[in-house]
Length: 215
Image 1 (tube, rainbow, N blue to C red):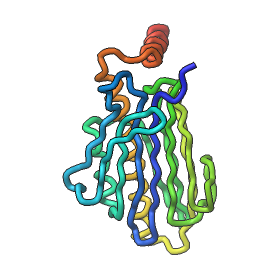
Image 2: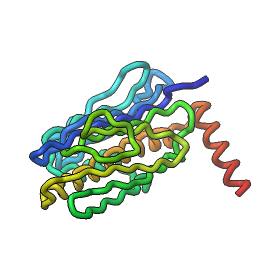
Image 3: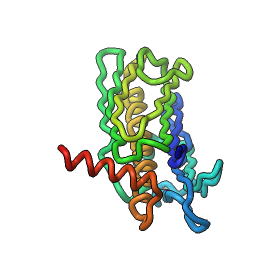
């Protein structure tokens, strides 16, 4: 059985002074010695705050991105890590008084259902009231997103003093999730460019095409 052929891991933290730091990994199992896996590139405007290094661990190769002390506006620019875009993440934020609600829909149907590891972890600047993710602490939540499926995200966070800075914090979270999209898209682009994809990719495409034929 094929396991762990794709790896996308995104972790980030939003600090109380509205700065964001974190790390992203986008990697795959190489098919030959020249295969470098998914490649990400730091946006020119963020060259001094974002570093992209080669990733090689546990049989995976690809890219790992480190970003530090980004403003919320700069976090949104991290979507430029990949030249391609996909509407894979659909997020909505609503505030009623001191309660901020995050709802989202993550569509990973394009990834092979087997052999993919996609994880997202977000540390919020306040205690999480409710969520459908896994609580890592009072203010940190993670989601293990199943490939080949659609996942709904939900979190409610209370802010004692809702103001412009609090809302900007959520803008930073939106930017961070855009970064997750860039990492996933980089993996998909890598798979598409490969002239001879591995068996698990061919099987996933065959299954998807078969479903479309019978719709």
